[in-house]
Image 1 (tube, rainbow, N blue to C red):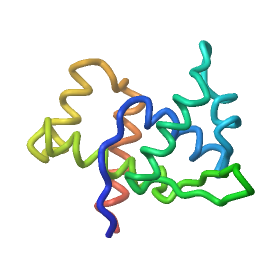
Image 2 (spheres, rainbow, N blue to C red):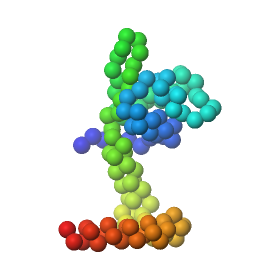
Image 3 (cartoon, rainbow, N blue to C red):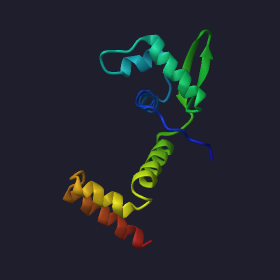
Image 4 (tube, rainbow, N blue to C red):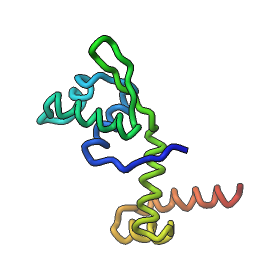
Amino acid sequence: MKQIKELTRAEEQIMQILWQLKKAFVKEVIEELPEPKPAYNTVSTFIRILETKGFIAHHSFGKSHQYYPLVSKEEYQNFSADKLLNGYFDNSVERMFSFFVEKEKIDLKEADEILKLIEKLKNK
């Protein structure tokens, strides 16, 4: 299993775009970013960092590079969820669920859906 590293907010924003587009040139990534658009060199630097971290790779077309993800969105979601669960809730799903309920981040309908999922798992 590959070692996943944590991304900065800017790196994650670029990864979100690459996960959505599947493959893109720097110019295409910039087009998807919100205003004010960062400079080409800034985005290019972040993309090189992502490549160094093993999150993306590229195909060369002359001097241009088209980038594509090596780490899937699901893999990074799992990494982030595990980090959240282990780092802040002592690996307790119950504590995490309680936190979100107390902070009113989960409404009754969502809680009901979660309970249905739990029942489904119990019946397997």
